[in-house]
Length: 267
Image (cartoon, rainbow, N blue to C red; front, side, top):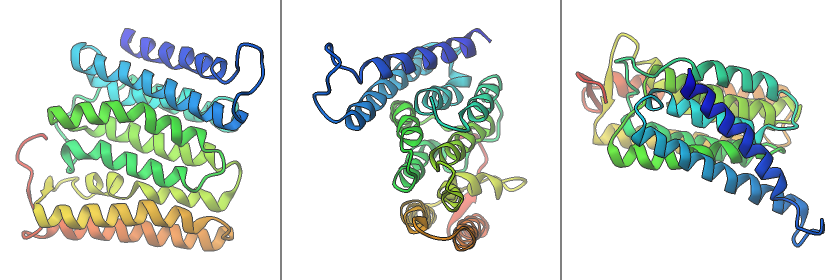
């Protein structure tokens, strides 16, 4: 509980710093306000993410909640002043309270976090309010680097936090444009790989990785952009189709002996 409270305080403090950094000493803009604001958001989110990554490495009490904590910090920094943020913040805060200590690990192992960054970049490229995905990506990036280096995967609780964080960035960043809500399809393999692992733990082989990464990158980086300017109905159909492709690919890889092997130990 103390770790969760500390992470929440870090996020709220970082928000105030981000806003103060967007103003010069005399109140005049050296660069356009929007550019300064986004630079401030990115810088503070990265610094906060580094703090979470360091705590994840060296503070045992924080490690089980570090992923959810980084998501909460990113949400707190990126969602301030935007509609729908309170719901997003509440869900993220609730997930910080759940430690990621289960034995069910993400089938994509240490690479689940980097693939989330690909998803969030796809969302950032499509939504009009880019602060939520920008802050989320910057807060998660240091933790992703640190966990890839150590070979640490994420479990069910952390995966839920990543899904809520990305979906929230879509919700808040879409600025009421319903068609852009279909950008949530950028979650791709981050969502479907563990879903198809329920009752059938698996991890991809070399060829399986090629399929998984290719499908995820194509869906995450192309579909959200295609949604811009679409009507709600067409966007919903395209998003559903993208979800179906990701789900079918994950299922096919997980059930193929040539593309995957049973996961006999947590990753």
